[in-house]
Every structure is written in structure tokens, then in C-alpha cells.
Length: 272
Image (tube, rainbow, N blue to C red; front, side, top):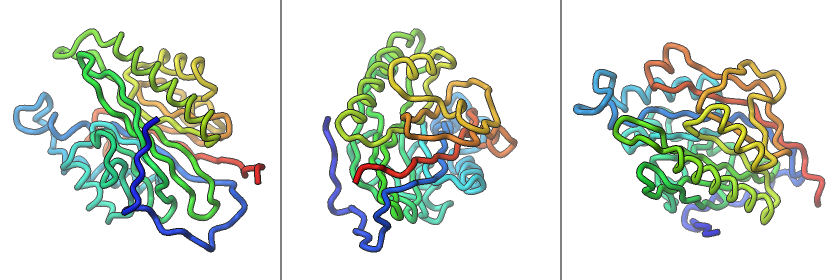
């Protein structure tokens, strides 16, 4: 597993951090924000507002729901810049300045909540089998010291220009499953998977049968059981609560996907 260290950008050590190793609580979301190129002149959805305009709305709903971590798909350069500006640089991004993966799929986290530990990626087939890097980041809670892996993926859809991607989706999902199992086995830290899987029930079946992960919508107090192509999964030690999907007016103007999100609770680490 190739891991990218970023010493120049490493967060400072917090000597006053608690030694309890948990519990850790935060809120995570997954959002395909509809790439800016789709709504640019000549794009297939050019009648919609620009990526920058739509990102303002996306940033507003992310702040409204008080999300601490977000897995973004179709997060193009102008949208990344707009997000950082619109959230007053309260978030850090991977890959961002760390490098090591394709930034069109990025993971964002609040800088006052988590420290960046390390980043890596899993390479999967996308349209026509072309390889794409999906980001994976290890974050450490500033207060508890607990660490959690976050993986964010976007598996290929079947479109008019790019049909017949079932095989590529299956291969991508298999590679993601293998990578999750490797992370859990070799590091012992829990893993959360966010992403646009471009599959509904089949995605849940593959992930939950191929790993020991569970879907956030099956956690406590779920406000939505609607199965879509956007997903959040977590390791057994990740407890989900209050899963929901926002498909309101702002989200509909911002993207062609809902924003899905959930509270996360990771119990205290019993290991010293």
C-alpha cells in the first residue's frame, strides 16, 4: 500500500490532547456536486448555473448541517476553490496540497476537529477502464487522539457517451473492498467509506457481504431508508445515528444528487 506523507503540511502536535483515545463523535456527509464542466458552455447541463454559483449553495447546506467530514465527487478545480472561499478556509482537503490522488474526488474535514495523519489512494477502472485514483485519508481527532480512515469513491455510471460500465463498476468495487480489508487488518483503525457507487441495492450487497461494514442508513434513528446510488458505510466500531438525505431546494439547485449525512460515534479504544 503506497502511503503519501506530507511532512511540510503535517499538523502540529497537540500536547494537551486528551489521552483517553475516545470516544470520538462527528458528522460525515457524501455529496456529488455535479462537476463544473457539466454546466459550463457546451456541457450537457449548460442551462444550469455555473459550478462556482452552485458551490455557494452546496457550502451553505454543508454548514447548515454542521458536517465535519465530507466526501466530494465531481469536485472540479473551480468548485474546490469556491468551497474553500465560501467556508472561509475552515476545511482542509485531501489530496489538496498533499498530492497523491485525483482531486476531482476529494475528502474535506474541519481543521479545528481533525489533524491530517497520512493519505493514500486506491486505483480503480473508470470509463472505458481508464484508471482513476480514489482518495483515502487517515484523520486524528484533535481532542481524543483516535484515528479513522476515510475513503471516498466514484464508480463509473452507464451514460450515453460511456455505456456498459457494469464490469468496470464490479472491478472497482472489488478493489475498494480489498483495500478496506487491508486497511482494517494492517492498521486496526476503523474505516468509513463515502461515495457515489452508481448502484443502488447492489452496492450495499457487495460492500456489506464483501466486508464487515454496515450502511449508515441502517444505523440508529435513521430518517431515510430511501436507497439511492450515494452511500456511507462504516466498520463495526463505527456507530451511525440519524442518517438523512437532503434533497431540498438548495441541494436541487446545487447538484443533481442529494446530500447524504450521518452522525458518527466511535467508542473509546480499550487498547492502551
